[in-house]
Length: 250
Length: 87
Image 1 (cartoon, helix red, strand yellow):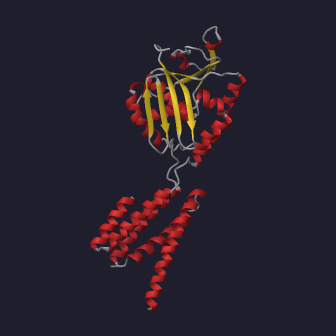
Image 2 (image 1 turned 180 degrees about the vertical axis):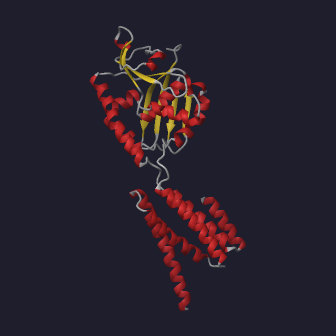
Image 3 (image 1 turned 90 degrees about the vertical axis):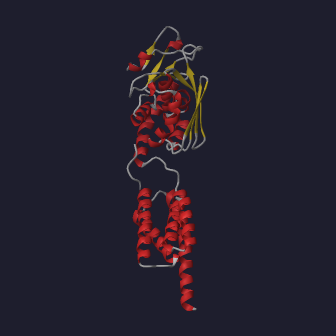
């Protein structure tokens, strides 16, 4: 708008037609106003939804603390349009990590015992960002388990922008078993910051809603178990590093 | 997921429509001075701001800044016109 206005204005000035010059000035003016607007933030409805979901997320954090769980959550892959991966939080982390069976994604149980050792017991949760994955599939009209990582990397930015999660492009880089995702201009920055200060276990072990949505989506796209290596937030930019747990490599 | 059209979008659409209307009407009236167009844009800016208020504090702060610039330009145009009349 700014460039168009300047071009039309200069053109109008040189050919001496005042209405064209005025139209150019008007476009230039609108461009300046649009540029001066603050970054879009979550709307009032979004804020209400965020505030409503916050207590549940704080409860999960308290549950993790009460059960003295120190392990990172393992996202269980799932296939099928609209189906959302689940996350298993083992009581103890093990090497190699536990790879829970895919059938668990249909389970409605929370406290699970898969074997005798402590690392085979844990809590099975719906990931905080699970429904975002479902919304992403609805928006893109694609079952994420049927597309390749390259295609997902190309489409996640459009999906996040349309779902009002971020207002800028999302960068996704996959190197070996590590996937790094960079989300800029996060629209729910206040929720992200609040969770990082009030629910640090949830953020580190399962992920905030956006981190969790990314982990769940990557799990579905790769068809492998995924866990969060690291996630950083600097006020508007979220950087997530995920580890894809391929059954052959662990 | 979005909550429909937001206030700032109403402002931008209304203001863009008014700018185009002003250019169409003034060019139809054979107005040849660009300062009259700019003065029109400035007055419309304040009208649309008032009609679509209130805004969030951050939006208001930035709009106030543009408003001050507009006011300076508008005052300059008026002073220039008054001086033209006096001389």
